[in-house]
Length: 253
Image (cartoon, rainbow, N blue to C red; front, side, top):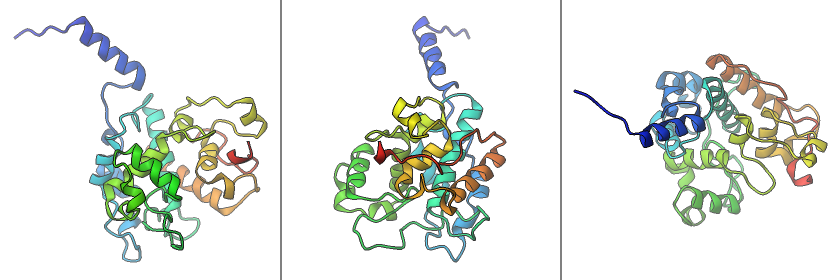
């Protein structure tokens, strides 16, 4: 049997290759079930309030809604993005002992729940504005504003909000995705604020107002520790500029 491929189809494949650096590989080719279980082995510990919530199936389903997540660039770039995403979110949900970097995804809900829009999910989504933007971004409209607990009770929605935050530029902040794949180019204002490409800027995007520009601190060290652990598991280099100790946060211009 003979097959013919039209020039249009070939052009589409070539265009896909230029964009992703791969041919239709999805996130599951890097984050296998085995890797997921090894990275997040503590999450189902009896001591974890989130035991049983964060499943591999929920992660893959959510990730496949964002075709560029973990699929952009060469294999090293894709693995670094995976390591960075899980490094940041593992810190946000850490329930392990300090310095071990193996207790990620233990928590679903923020301990302090005094505000209706307290932190939930892998990225610990907070503030009404983020729930509203995330709801629009993942296609559920005002559902998350009206019922923010969906982020803590539906694991697919929970992962989707985290990946939406990761993939989306907001205000004067680049997306975490663009930073880790090397697409972001700092402006003169960024450079004067010591915000240069690297994992440290991602910390600044996520929680810079509390953690960045304050010198060495345990929270930033934790984020770096998780990232280094996952880079080691994936056999990729961490790159430079891992901390934000001397960076101004984005709210400072």
